[in-house]
Image (cartoon, rainbow, N blue to C red; front, side):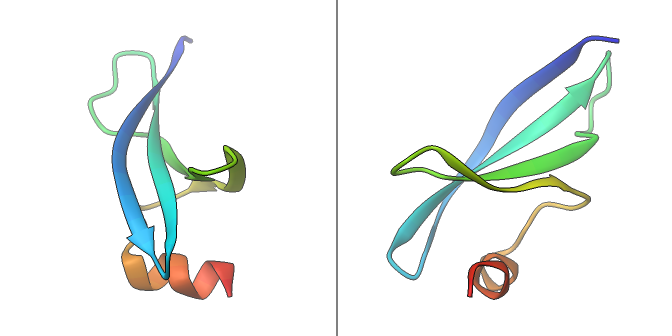
Length: 63
C-alpha cells in the first residue's frame, strides 16, 4: 500500500523546534503513526509514535 507523509504541526519545546509528521497508509484519514523530527537539523528523534505527542510528552522524551 502507498504510504503518505504529511506535516501536521511545528511545536516549540524548551527552545527547540520540532516537526510532527503523520504517516498515512493507503486511503486512511487518520495517521497510522507519527514521526517527531528536530527542525533545525532534520534529525528524526522518534518514529512510529502511536499518538500525537503533547509538549509535555516531547519534553519527557528528549530529556
